[in-house]
Amino acid sequence: MELPSGQYRANEIFEGVTTMSEKETIDKKRLMKLVTYFVLGDGGVYRRTAKANCSFIMNMKQENADYIFWVKEVLENITSARVVERDLKDDCYARKPQFRLETETHPYFNVLRARMYIDTYKGIDEHSLKLLDAEALAILHMCAGSYRKVKGCDSHDVTLNMKRLSYGDQILLKKTLKETLDLEWNVNRNNQYYYLRLRCKDVDKFMELVTPFVKPSFGYKLKRTAPVKGDDIV
Image (cartoon, rainbow, N blue to C red; front, side, top):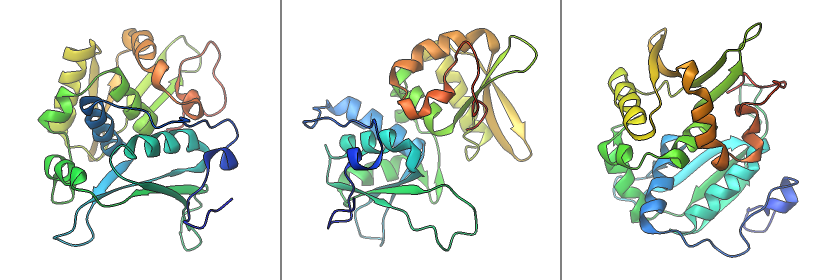
């Protein structure tokens, strides 16, 4: 399955994964939105030395290969990218097999680094909030969201667990989600961290917005008539 370059073909790795037969043409605004929210999700932009251009890097479980290869296809509108199997043999945690997606360095990623990072803190910036829409929210839900049906009642629980964000950034995200998508969230606290919980009456509206954009491997995060094993796992 491994190619000489270290890359993997999606259809050799994950049954049912499909990629675009020809590179999708993405307009500049949507491209910036997608890459911004890839970074706000599970990705990041990093530079190896102070004067080098940045590259995009993301680690994710192999079972989410459909998302990984979609991100790769999008990023190839900017520069070349590869997916390799992550070496976890020295990892002290019992992690599931993972892939690592990494692009070549490119000035495009320098802009995101300057916008979204303060030293090592990756936060919410004004431009990111202006780009927020249903597709962007779906990316956050796939990377950092959770859904579960509360046992014993007809209540459904949706959270955005971006606990690296400060309280102030959580407030800004909550405000923009209300103004842009008419979704009301509460800022909850877990020890020293904060996260967003959606009010119950907005769950159906939320699901209607994000479902068209959620990849099949993240289907357990979508509302169904009956819950299945894994519904409460982020």
